[in-house]
Every structure is written in C-alpha cells, then in structure tokens.
Length: 284
Image 1 (cartoon, one colour):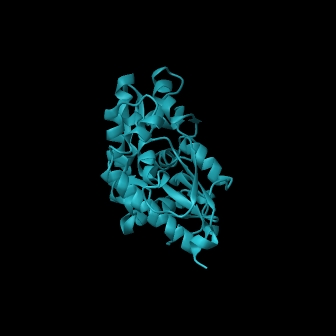
Image 2 (image 1 turned 30 degrees about the horizontal axis):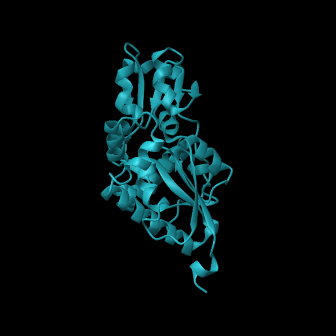
Image 3 (image 1 turned 90 degrees about the vertical axis):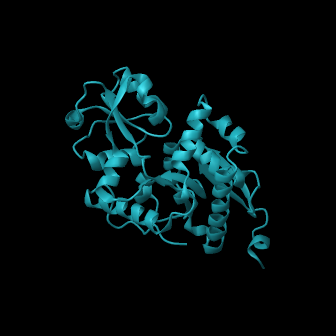
C-alpha cells in the first residue's frame, strides 16, 4: 500500500509566523499550488509562540528560532528547506543616541523572546548581559525610544524602520557573526517530528522546497496572502523583508547552511548555553 493510500485523510499541523518571509514561502503549499498529499492545519503566530509550542511538542511541523534547537532535537529533525539564513540579515542591537556599547553588560536589554536566535546571539556576543527583558519583537523599538529599556535586539522588519524612532545601531550581530565565522547567519528553520517517518519527511521537505521556489518566482501572486498577515507593513517594507530573508539557502540549506547551524550549536555548547548531548540536526 502506498504512503498516500495508507495515510488518506491525514492532517499535518504546520506552524509559521505572520512575517512576510514565512507567508511567502508557505503560500503555495497552503493554497495547493504544489503537490502534497495531506490536509494542512496552519497555525500562524509569533515565532516565540512557535518556539514554546515546539518545546511542548504541539505541532507536527513548525518554523522555529535556531536558538531553541537544544530543547527540541530529540523529537524533531531540521528540514533542508524553509530556513531564514543569509548574509546582512542578522539582529541589530539598538539604543538611543549617546548609549555606549560598553554599557550593555549592565543594561536592560529587550529581546524578542528567550528562545529566539536574537537572544542567543546577544548572549554569545555579550555573555555578561543578564538583564534581558522578553517582549514582542514589534514593541522593542518603541520600548527603547520611550526609555522602558536601555537597548534592544531587533529583528524582522524593525531593522528597516528603527531610525524612525531616533535610535542608533550599537552592534549588528549578523555582521559580528559573519566577521568571526565567515558563515551566513542562521536565524530560523523548519522542523518536523521524527515520528512522521522518513518517507513523509522527505515528501514534506520536497513540497516545501517547491513552495519556496514558487514564492520566490511568483511573489506578486502571494502578495494578498502576505499583506493579510503583515498588519500595517508598507509594500516597500514587505518587499525588503522577503528579499532579505528568502534566498537560495531558504530553498535548500546546502552544506554551507548546515555548517553554519552546526557552528552555532557548537558555539552555544562551548559557552554553556546549549546542553552538550543534543541530538544532531540530522539529514533527511
């Protein structure tokens, strides 16, 4: 009996964020533009919510921050497709003018969630920084501008608009990473439960790759779906966002992408942030 016949009517829960890069790459898969033999139940929410759901093993498939890998790899495998990884796209530490980067050690720093890669990179960059304040990523620039916190690690579209709040960049963590490693910065990836089995995991990874390529090729077709979830984002920012976070690594991590993820894990282990015995990201 073939896989499709044996699993007829099966549903697969897939979580991803409302950010333009995620809605763009999942558009074709959700709208049956690429072949996939199962019914998809989407869960669209903030990436830190997805991280928490992955920790609780709530979803079959999910976008996650690489900062949460050590909590989930026993039960999930990293897919080759769907990652947010690249160059010039890392988190940025921002503050009001006059703030000195040397003061980060004692500063109150807003982060977009405890398990985000931004939080992990901040801890790798400045291990002494302990006063971290989790909040929704969209609130961080405002919180810094209004003095609720001293600095903030910003991600997603906020990197395009933080100057509108009168803020300055203290450190580009992506540039810091690339300068030290020579590798692209791994921000987030798509994981799937190992229990789904090799055949289904391969089918899923292939379908997601086709969906990524479809979104890259037909960006205009996915625009209504992307805008519906992008809140007040302008078309210009949506376009910049997709161009920054959707690239060849998104279609397939490749050897360099996997090397970057493995290096991030190793660095986090050396700093005592990740546990030493985590399962391999694995290969399909």
